[in-house]
Length: 119
Image (tube, rainbow, N blue to C red):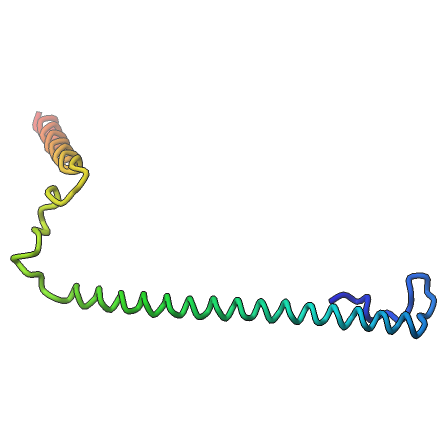
């Protein structure tokens, strides 16, 4: 809200007449009504956002509890896949080759260091 509603004078410094003051009060009242409607609309949108965030929070909390209960159960050996066999569950397939390549690189580096050290 601006300070223009608080001035009793026109821009030239002349005191306003009763008609001008009435028009000004009507304009001020309309502006306040518009502002109040905008604030009500904003409050209703924020209340909807709070409700949707509350629902989402409840859903995520139930998913978390469900995931924690599943993780605390021991795996069934008949239906569970082998957890240590990451190459068989990897969809890329190249990951196993890269792990093997890194292992071979480190073995070769160790052999070269040993050969250099022992002469």
